Length: 360
Image: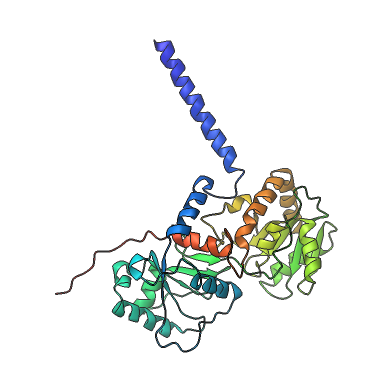
């Protein structure tokens, strides 16, 4: 009897271990943090998600934005079936204002929402979201404080320092005008270069960027292009390089195209990055390499060569799978940038609803 029980226990342990190992292996074939839940949840979002738009009163001019990504998100949302005219069926409320709105105007807008509609006071703005590439700082006005601390901020990547709250706020993937009708890189790509960096002149942090670029420019395994390079040359270099280098806070708009052309992004940063697009959807550590700005050309090359020996093809393949989420379309398509941003909003729809205070 004891021997039989031991056999059953051993069988159970081995079965559990096999399941855990198979799950771990399966996860390595997906760029998503939760590959078993993202697709059914995405389908549920498509059929049930509703957003009510809170527009500024007495606005004569149409809403305008400073970036194409903001404009595309706004236009796509307004023309989508996700918008409802009935605030009682809304999961989230979009506090709409243009890029040139002053902090005083934003505070006045929130004050009007508080006074005219009952929805803000139910959660102190926790089921509201707004869009601002510049972000909102920590102001003393009560309306701005609640908007900043409680509401979801959609900003551009990268977000200005101090203007982003992790786990609450989200960022728009950068818009890049490269034609999306072009095919992805072939599955078995033979790269000509180890690394490719598209220089942006004197933009960015200056000294550390220039020093590294100067050191790499003499290495035949790296190709350094200028911002003035034509798009065709740029795409050829993306497709013929194993890694594409980006300096965080300089210009990271090409990350999506690097992923699509099978060029693994290498993000050079001073510290941890908390505002990556789709941070709670994509397993970034599996599709990109992150290195510190203090590394010289020799150390950087060592990291890239080591990555080539340890999982490069997997990273490249997962990155190509994930690249669809960086595509901005004039007419939104499944799993594109617009829908993936909406999915992040959908994931944040469960706001704490405070008991309504009755005044006597």
